[in-house]
Image (cartoon, rainbow, N blue to C red):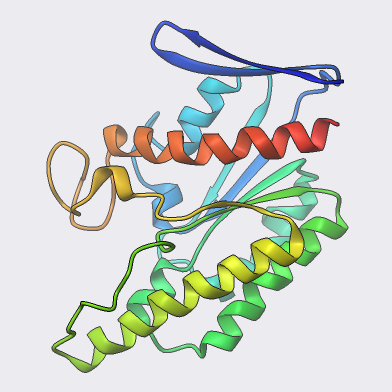
Length: 216
């Protein structure tokens, strides 16, 4: 039986697993929400601080999409032989609202399937999830499209999580809403260092589960 411990030290969070003590390699692939925060302020920087015995690699690229992530997945992720992969993509697909939803779902499923084939656990970190849009009344065509995309992205994320046994972080920014407000945002779309700490805490909850599953 494994013993998993969470240690609270000096205001930080540290996670350790007793049993298989091999260091884990965690790769975070994403868009500007993975790349933002400045030096020491990415959400991955917090994950690294809370996992001092493991290695957390940030592969965030501003403006990236699910299709772009799929294209670079082999080189930027799989070739690093990760134990756990955090996939944070889809926000730019929401803003553009142009790629067919079925294609977006296919890109994410392909990355997840390849991860599982490589023996990695997967955490899907998302801006979408449980928010209800039924009471929203979009006033422009692009806003109507974005409402549809938000709902559909959440739906296919949940479907893929269920079918592939992934770990899911819906509404990863819920603790720092609304966008653009002090003290958690650099601008209207990108959290600052303080905001990313709260995002990281949400991701960390599921990441611990993925690490524990990988170490069994």
